[in-house]
Amino acid sequence: MTSCVALVKCENYNQKDVDSAISEVLSNVGGIKKYVKKGNRVLLKVNLLAPANSEDAVTTHPSMVRAMIRQIKKAGGIPHVGDCSGFEGQKNRKKYLAICQKAGISKVCKEEGAVIAHLSSESSEVTNKNGRAFKRFTVSKEVIESDVLISMPKLKTHGLTIFTGAIKNNFGCIPGLGKAKMHLRAPEAEIFAQMLVDLAGVVKPDLVVMDAVVGMEGAGPRNGKPKHIGAIIAGKDSVAVDAVASKIIGMNPFMIATTRMADKQGLGVGDIKKIKIIGEPIKKMCVKGFEFKKAPSSFFRAHFFLRFVRDLFLAKPVLVANNCKSCMTCVNHCPAGAISKKGVIVFDYKKCIRCYCCQELCPHNAIELKTPLIGKLIS
Ligand code: SF4
Ligand code: SF4
Image 1 (cartoon, protein in one colour):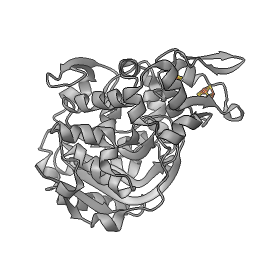
Image 2 (cartoon, helix red, strand yellow):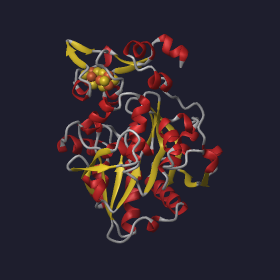
Image 3 (cartoon, rainbow, N blue to C red):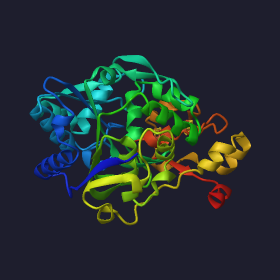
């Protein structure tokens, strides 16, 4: 099995440059008309994790979204743009629209005539009979009912999965608190990765166009630093797109559990030697010194599930009290109910399942992941 991935240079988000890079990357994967036919309802599944300005590198950049909307319209499709934001928590259209506004997505949709889709609004049950650990998912109806699904992830680091790209972007197709429930059912990194891979068996984008012009390093996916990468990566195979993306930022693709598992289960190609790159040579696009927040060892996550061992080895969320603004986001989103406010924010580590949603969603960079010394030494 081999796969093709298109890789083009795009140094900045100037609309003209992005339009031209998107046109090139699409032509390298066969042209937009290969995917979008006249009258098709096309969902651009972007990353709208939390309210953030486009230059913070938290969300898919609006110039990328604008360029894709233009391409879809040119092919005669009807563009819809959306996500189910983790920050939204329970279905909350007002909160969701505020996130779209801040990320520059509302403006782009209004100016280009695209529909803002609220992925949390309605959902359906879907079954993956081949799922290894998870066979049933609640998925947004917008996703199910679209004629064409185009995933537009943002390349970022992630506390639990090390890296977030195409396969992780599908998680935003699970509405509202359904995501928190999945975290509870899949508390360990390996099982969480398996859940994402099982989800990839039912949410299958027709195309992935990854925003890697400016990615996020360090404490991603919310509180890391923007890092210039200068690339747009596209392909039909989500696993191969993720493999190329992780290679560019200096990571062996098989260190990413979702890539390794999805490759093994035949959902795509994660072996870089079996991926045909169309466009820029991958070596030319690699960035040096990309900073990862060292993830807790998946070995220990997978094999030492006893609580006392977990406490010895795994990173735990800790409060950076000076940054905390008592906004209660972490309290309201913790799937395990492990955070409370007793004057200050307090973690109950007995209840904490180490999903790191609190670190992901804190708007003020007030939660850090701290690995105990013994865990650092061993991992
Ligand atoms: S830690 Fe972050 S999310 Fe939690 S209350 Fe403080 S600022 Fe809000
Ligand atoms: S405290 Fe943070 S890491 Fe622990 S379960 Fe709650 S959200 Fe997840």
